Image 1 (spheres, rainbow, N blue to C red):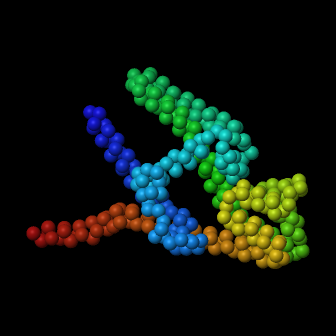
Image 2: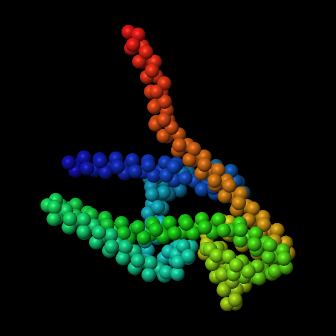
Image 3: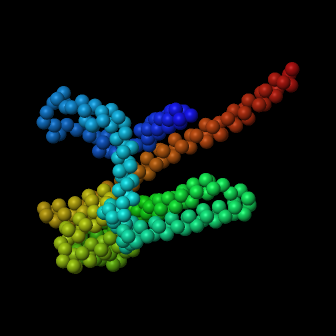
Length: 309
């Protein structure tokens, strides 16, 4: 019995590792796809490099378990009550909640879901279908699920706010370019945009303007805003403004170019999404509509053949 359990556990772990290492479960980033084609900075021959088995202390086992271990470390860092990553995530979500307050909210969500699970167990107890082991599993699952559900909702808030910022960025960049082209300074253009527009991006510019008024430089305030938002488009925008300010390049043209780049990126993302949806739509067409079409096309002929007999 114990041997069967151990063999089943090994089989389950192996299947789980295979599932985790599938391409659609662990997509490569753009940098990882581009890295094999870049040879800059290589000062020695690749023939002198260490073999793959010697790059980890556990050999091939370390390479197999590496992605799973990195995911566990990342999850542990997210659950750490005092890490700085949570503070950055809260800032990305636009929340003024502190780390400890967020952990308190997670505990409240956990307690609320546990109460719901206890109520369901109470209903089963009244109905005479009480199972102590199942009740314990439900309570523990509700407690852990409520704690993780608040973290998942924070990720959803970050995603939605990032999408709103990307949608607002081209328009606000055009307004800033128009203000700068009309004679306004960069700080004046930011102030005008923050005063005349609403949304997540205007709030971020208002915070950057507050940093400038408190004594920070414009470059430092914009860099802090880019670090807080953590979007590639905003980082390029801030770097372009800083470089234009240092070299004397017309800032209005730089802002318009950045806005056009974001619009082009949105179009490319839309085309990629449409391509994925097109492939997904083939499933109901092939397995749902096409068999019915074949049945409707073949059935009259079969009926005529039976009638002829």
